[in-house]
Image (cartoon, rainbow, N blue to C red):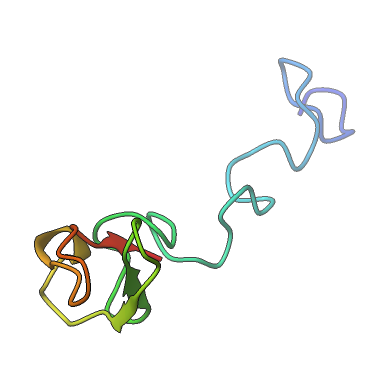
Length: 76
């Protein structure tokens, strides 16, 4: 801060560092809500018929088959 105004030697002003704001996906955990590893809560949904099944801990939705039509489930 050679000039004493908080800009530093390269002209970056205060507040330009990491962690100053919340980007996309803020508050949804480390990876987001609909990706593999998104956490224990939520539902698995069938892309074909729309049937919803509660998501089980340690069981990825893509390993489950829809109880109605047999298609692979996805995370909601």
